[in-house]
Image (cartoon, rainbow, N blue to C red; front, side, top):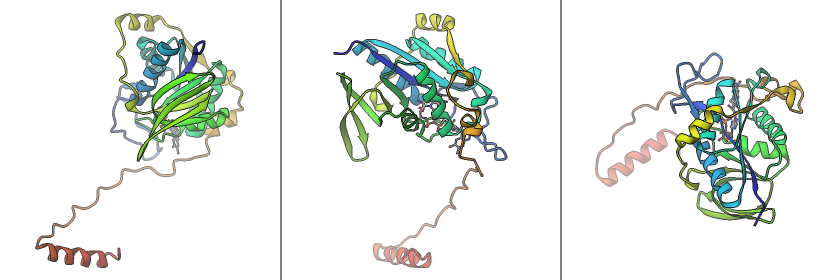
Length: 265
Ligand SMILES: Cc1cc2nc3c(=O)[nH]c(=O)nc-3n(C[C@H](O)[C@H](O)[C@H](O)COP(=O)(O)OP(=O)(O)OC[C@H]3O[C@@H](n4cnc5c(N)ncnc54)[C@H](O)[C@@H]3O)c2cc1C
């Protein structure tokens, strides 16, 4: 058994829609008029943090980087039962790609120490890269395991878990501290209680600004982002296709003809 686990859950506030629209000129998301919610994948991360606290004791802190309105997403996680919420918010953090985002989150995690397990969602419903968790582990110099679908045990400074692969399930063991990203199969997120909602209203949201992290301005936000959105567009759907009819032999001949015509074979 362990004394108690220090869990940090990373959550992102995202638009409440999967139909994300882009401004083709700036390459940025159109957020106007769309409500924001906790990234659905991150609810599983929060739930896993809470259930780990129930199994092993300890504390669950939540971290988000975003504009001041991301506070409401953090309050939602307090309502679910998390102990503390931290918001990294500063103009200097704006325009970050996944590299600068994960660096900033890693620096925040160091400020929030101690930490044993950092839990991220598998991916977000807007950016959808799935890069932030593994990149953060790299910045922190600690291991990471993605696609985790079950925590088997935590003891003697190690975690045993399973993760989903395309062709099966793998059981792994790794030393703490570690970053994991979790799948939707790992649990069923709980709903916030009325008492939770009441305490969430009054909860202090701890703020982290660029002055609080050990980084130069050139490492943060747009300046610290090596990637640039050169062009963004919605691909045109492919043309309707052609319906061919006939006996199996005739169909085979027609398909062969098409493949030769299209220089596929
Ligand atoms: C090439 C490129 C350029 C970009 N340029 C810009 C830009 O100019 N301006 C801009 O605003 N955005 C920009 N973005 C979007 C920005 O990189 C993402 O919002 C951010 O890095 C998170 O990436 P993601 O949504 O793909 O997260 P994923 O990697 O899919 O998220 C995985 C998990 O990481 C955690 N996580 C992710 N983001 C956060 C967060 N902010 N706080 C806490 N936890 C988090 C969550 O647990 C989440 O489930 C750009 C993205 C790319 C790929």
